[in-house]
Length: 164
Image 1 (cartoon, one colour):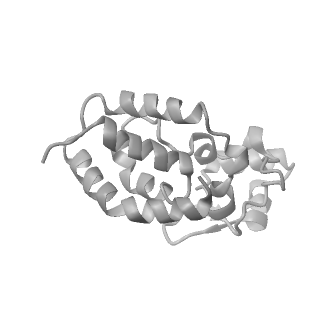
Image 2 (image 1 turned 90 degrees about the vertical axis):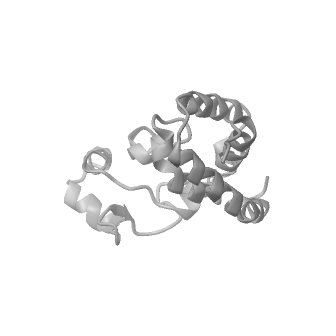
């Protein structure tokens, strides 16, 4: 799915996804995390993130203090130097990148800091995490960014029919 198609499909599905997530948050089934892990695994067996990298091109991860220390060490800098060169504090008081696309993304969609990358990048798109119901708003946003997330959410809506 190309990214223009993704945006159109995510827009069309947004209202139904919001309603679905509202029901899911109200009464998350005990098996939700297991279902999400299975769907995540299924979709990512045939997803190559290197052909897309839209997450790296359009959004910034949140950088924790551990991420900043790890990346500063990677670049042989002090954490303060890393912050002043690459990060700023956003309106939610989180450290995020100064620019998009990510300055660590190469032209072939690989990451020059892959082994040292932030935790948020390691876990993206977060569709296989525990207590998935806690990140439904983030997941809705990610359906516009990540084709795999869109597929996983659409498969979830088919696999787990919610009443009321």
